[in-house]
Length: 231
Image 1 (tube, rainbow, N blue to C red):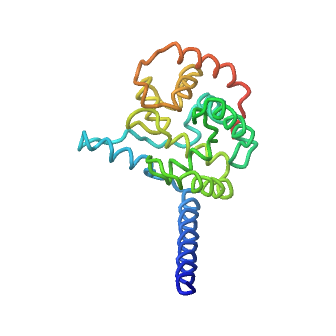
Image 2 (tube, rainbow, N blue to C red):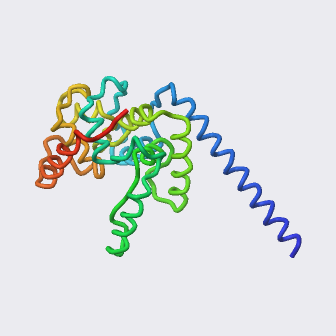
């Protein structure tokens, strides 16, 4: 029994060491991305692998643009739609988490989420699209590192450049070209609001998509954009 316990403790210790080293690996990448732009993300690579099962030669649409070349309308629209407390929290919106938990309890299933922009960026940068039990805990740890190392401006810049906006379409510049035939810098308030509405389910919409839901939700975001605070 003692020998078994020693083996268990050794296994636990090795697992903790490996987990700690993994967090330092994440931290090293985050420090690097404070001043360098990622060419792709774990989520992008995972989606490309899935797409290439049917289209072996497929490529992602992704064009990096600096923060200053992204429309202020889009920054405010995305913040209003996805994380209206972005400038105030340290990575987690606990009030939104509580509300989502209560709504999900009433529904009897997970219907509502409460991920902040920082949490979504953590997933996009490091975690594959597949669901797994450990993802939420690792996402939280990465979110803490992102908020500790990067400014809010850099977090939003990274997010807007890597988030999915269509099947194989990533980042504000590719999204603006794909959906509206324009650039990220030239997006109008209405176009920005429409893009923000697409974020929870980006592969559901193609160029020219127009539904009652999109119209109503776009109008709601347009009304909230003026109050959104961005870095």
